[in-house]
Length: 258
Image (cartoon, rainbow, N blue to C red):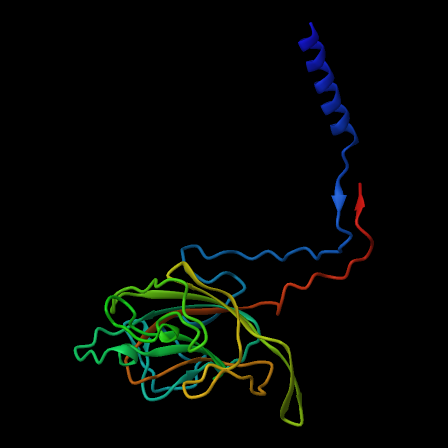
């Protein structure tokens, strides 16, 4: 009898608690997220993306020496930049490292890179198997700043993907000189679907012969693909412009319960 009575008491307490529970609200006036249609197949551009290369047209790019071969744009005779300039973005790009007969090894094997401006590079390199180099210079690294958490590289000749989120820096520039880094740049990289760089804070430009440091540059920068003397192929390149950071909208009122 006592057990039954205790059970009724517990049920009654639960019912009362549910009756007095209220819906907590933050007081932030969020905007309704706009609807974006995802691609119909994996890696296809969503509806709000800007297609930079679709396998047929290089009109978004400045270097006409890069030719289209079997639906891919091939690195040749100098770097290639987009005509349009961007701030913070989500970038999708697919690449294939050539199967070289003369493997020089290290940085001499399938070298290229994805740059934001000419300032910030995510390295492209043959890092499959036994091609060894310095870890902050292998495929997927933020060049000479951050080694990837894991090596997700495929064999030369196989198509690979980068999905990169770049949050641009906010630089205070006066009379052409850098006065203050108000907000550093950040990069996140997925390589072949694997997270390898997680919201890394950039220490500045990614130079081969200098320590990282910020230089004054415009707020908007082109996407740049590097020609390092190797016929690296690129396809299915698209980009989405995104907000610079995750700053919340203004709070219109104190948090409250409904």
